[in-house]
Length: 346
Image 1 (cartoon, rainbow, N blue to C red):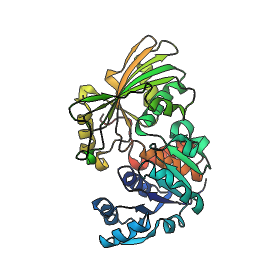
Image 2 (image 1 turned 90 degrees about the vertical axis):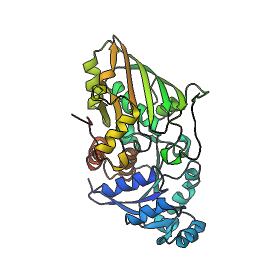
Image 3 (image 1 turned 90 degrees about the horizontal axis):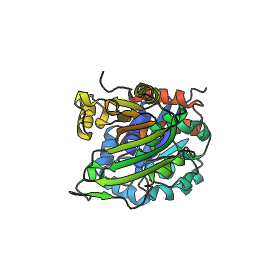
Image 4 (image 1 turned 30 degrees about the vertical axis):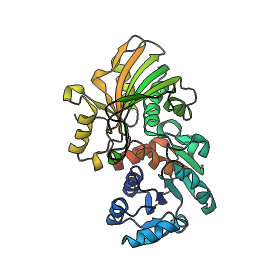
């Protein structure tokens, strides 16, 4: 295994991008060469305060960034000429349009779940298909909800317990920083299509999953809630299922008996634990509410949409560049650097 540092670019310093940049900076085997964006407001000014070299994603953005007093090191092409891989966290559709630039520059690229599977031909969750990403030029880290589905159902599948799964997702209306822009107010909106896109998306990572998802959009911005009904391959007991989840990467237990009874209390806990931005990278699964009846399993968990895909992106960097050939060793490195846990409180 090589000890070289992979040179990484970040294109799109938004909700996900800024978190990826910070996570890359924490890795001993990676170097964040720079971040690129088109904005010149407080968001990118924070990146400058952190000492990240700034690049303009477009020529037009270069002028406005300089006018705003930002020091830019060049444009996106200049950044791409210095790196091995780019993590693209630009808005949906804009990211897809960037692919031609990455191909021209000869750099590997990682996209986020807002893009279609067909863009890259490969969708990624570290615990499920790290090996198939090794050495690829492109991959797509699936969305926050899909990531959680693969983490949890994938754990049951590897244990030989998963027959089929049916899930209901209560989705947040918008990201917290955009709460003043638009969103659902004082209502709940069911999504028309069944299955909702998350189930089929999980099958791009684990094709044999028998999973159907339904989703509703609710009037809140503080993460997603999943409710799952799973048919097991055989009768099991609660302790067996909990041990399967405990041994899987990036699933951490919550206890309602600790007063963690809702989405807001969990996020308050993250803040009290000193998590950067109050982030929760793990699937927060309510262990004391999990119920098994014969071969039926029922459980709920929380997905913090702003952060859960960040460790997956870090692992995708290692996989594409073959910095680490073993997926679980990469997961261990990433989790150690970020401080990912199995229990939030003991």
